[in-house]
Length: 508
Image 1 (cartoon, helix red, strand yellow):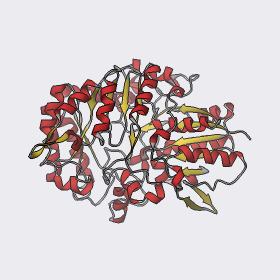
Image 2 (tube, rainbow, N blue to C red; image 1 turned 135 degrees about the horizontal axis):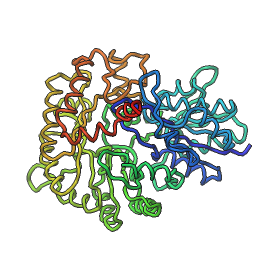
Image 3 (tube, rainbow, N blue to C red; image 1 turned 45 degrees about the vertical axis):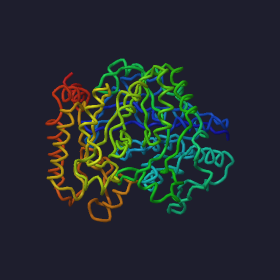
Image 4 (cartoon, one colour; image 1 turned 120 degrees about the vertical axis):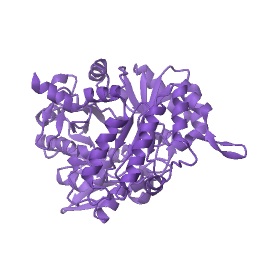
């Protein structure tokens, strides 16, 4: 039987204080490129917005309050099954990177198997890898435990030939037990130029354009066609709250994908040109460590200056890369590098300060920021003076963090906003499956083994027995968000929160 593949971004469920957005992230776009390069027909479905036959009022704009208290957007399970059946798809791939969306990814598996138990269902992504048991129990036939560009092709080929799915880089069930086949050296790439080009042209741009025209996906209000791009994979740091920490601790299980690897300058520029040809005006850079190789980055930026694109890094960059050496003295802020970033169109960069406590940074964040060496207040002042919008991320509520340390981070956040940061977002650390904080929390009794993924939101203190009680952490987070930021930020934030839209819909 000839394979016909549908790769699915699942619908989304949101807490009241979250904002909705379509998907279109890079993972499935690479997989589609890999499959089609081997002659395997492949389509992409963003179930948040549906097919071009679907109306946004039936998907993205349809808010459904679920029994778990979360608001669901996107296609119904029945509609998903209908698309799979009528499209003649016999292979369905499901992307799951984020633990709070586990339920939604499992719905896609349910929809596929409702059409036919014979449909091959493949799950991938950080969360699917970490919760492979749940995905396999729900009906997935295989879960990818590494980068999927080569693995998914081998899985589809094996299925096409009627063979079993004993493919390296996968987890499957055998007699009710998980069989974990570690990646082979050939399953992952060290030279990222060997990756297929992401198939951006397969995205439902007509739907995305309507959403952007209605105000964009961000309260920063920049409504134009946008897309994601990565210039590298991996990171030099090993923060406990990041998936990189697990990938570096267990490289044999994941194929060493936490190691920092780069695309060439020419490959990056070719991808940017492709996005321009698709009328993309704003590019979101999603690297885990965008600025890690500054000489390489400078070469890219000099060329990008000519393209007239807007660039943004909303995942955050490692702030240490804004320092440079000085003759006979301590490192200083690299003003010229910041100016080059601005000239190249990178005018929106999230600064992940994370904490005012050096102890917390050293314990949980690889000491990647040293407050004695980098004056983050001065960094914000300089960046804003150049013209770079630089929101700040803080994390409060680590297991052994004291209230005094939390308050010091809140105070620093306030001073950073006063120095020019657009806003300061305070996030509660979540022990997401697939990072070291998760394993530590389970081992030390901070997390129940029967945890509910639906609760794993950055605004929920899901850990127990912490130095500051979870209820108090949530109080401090809410007080910080509203006490530190401007009235305009609070108003704009409230406007896009899904809870506001839900309440408005109930009144109609």
